[in-house]
Image 1 (cartoon, rainbow, N blue to C red):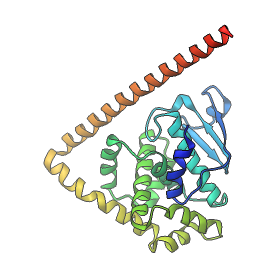
Image 2: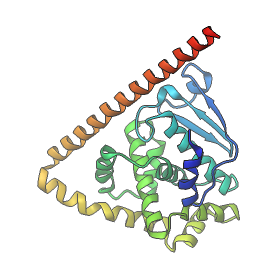
Image 3: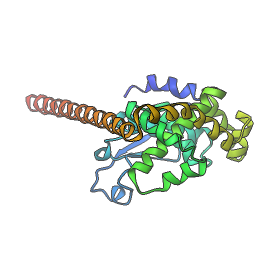
Image 4: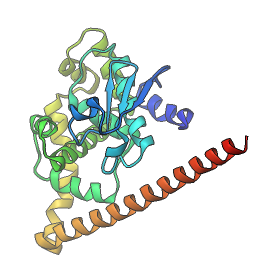
Length: 251
C-alpha cells in the first residue's frame, strides 16, 4: 500500500504514521480467529501490532484489505499519540473511520436515520458491545459522524490534540473539554442536530416505508458494487499468482 499518501490524512488529524507495524494475516481456521468475534476484520494492539482476518472483509467500514490496514494504522497512531493510555472505543473507531474510510451513499442514508434518534454517547458505546452486526455498523457510523463534526468545528487536528493531553495524564473527558470547550454530551447533541433537518422532511415527502425502501435499494446497489470489486481484485490476485508461478517455473 502507498503509506506515503496516507501520512497526509494522519498528519491533518494531529497524528503520525507509525514507524513500525507488525502485520499478521490470520485465516479463519486459526485459533486467533476462532476466539475473535466473526464481524471483526482487523485488530490493533498497543503501538505496533496488527491482525487482519482477510476472509472477513466484506462490509462497512472495510471493503478491501487496504482499508482494513489503514483503519488499524490509525488505531496504532492514536495509541502512540496517547502513549498507549486508554481512549474511549467510540473515539478510537470514530477517528479511524474519519481518517481512513469515510462512508458511502448507503452508509450516509443509514446514518441519517440513526442520528435522527439523537442517541447519547452511552448508546453509541453500547452499540459497540452488541453481538448484532447491524448494531456494530450503526455504531461505526455514529462514531465517525460525531468525530467528523468535532473536527469540522474545532479543527481537523483535534483528535491528536486530545490524545496528547491524555498522554500527559489528563482523563479523556477533561482532555476533550480542554481542546473543544464543550463536554462530550454537548458535542454529541450538536452533531446530531445537523441530521435532524434531513430526517424531518424526508419521511413527509416519501413516506416512511418508501424511505426505507430507498435506503435498502441504495444499500443493495452498494453491496453489488462491493461484490464486483472484490471479485475483480481476486481475479487480479489469481492472475498475478499464476504469473509468479510461471516465471518461477521458467527460471
